[in-house]
Image 1 (tube, rainbow, N blue to C red):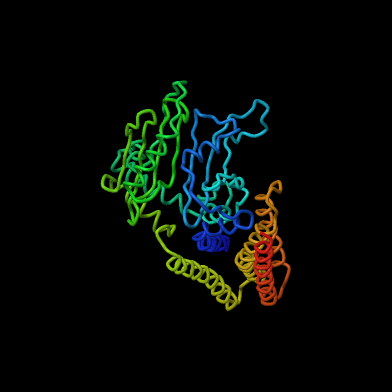
Image 2 (image 1 turned 135 degrees about the horizontal axis):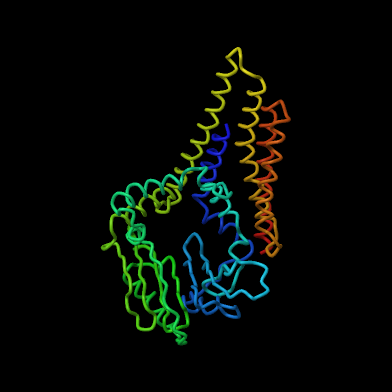
Length: 395
């Protein structure tokens, strides 16, 4: 019963997380509408991101480019922590408007989409991926099939062929403005592959040893990995993988990832994925109910064990649905800037689920509780719609 409950969480959250970009944008829009006009260059975004911050140039500066689903830059800036720092988090994550360059918020201020996604692949708990088995099993398959057999245990060679490259340039302590070179290389990428790179990462930015790491895909192709590394002082190509040069390991990894996450799919195909995922959730619940029915037909079946299964089934399914609706409500009504906004949203989910599990155990009339739960979930969703309307009219 515990396994089936966890599987329900994995498939239910996985189905919703197909739309995590849309969920993230839904979280942001009431607080900031994207500006209209000419888009700033990547180097200008970099300059604004590190401005007035203790930027650690010896590490890296990362930009995730805007998309139609997420029209904002996600920028990660490594910083130098002060000696009296009370945290070991040595970076800031910023959501930036690509037109105005305004810093909208910290990325984690809108944590709902990521929270749902983490519930899917690791239940949002330490070592949760080993419980769900998804990531763990994929790793085992790759280790056996490639690292042990083909690569004879050479994991570094495996990582290189899989497209994982790590840059470690030596710091020269020779200041050099390479912003123009960044824009030039990005323009070359767009001209060659039809769209901007998905991720830009600068190493030793501002030093003559700076490098620019760009990765993405070629426009209009299903599997077309592109990864390039350039020296920013002279534009020399240090590493390059294009759709024409990608090996089978890189292509296979991206195919599996793309098929699993539905990254290639439009709204219609993702809706089909959603329905299929929900269908699996129905099968999980049906399996529990069939087990209960079989047990009830046995003379020696324990009423307590049957009651426990009924309570666990109701709590781990309807309870998860109700708690998810509550998390959406908190994401919408909590003001931006509230301390621990992401933690409050997660606490609403955990508290709602915990309370529901307790009630599922105490309440004997499960059908009545299920009916009330459906009504309560519908009321929460209507409240979210009302809150959306209020926020949109006051924007």
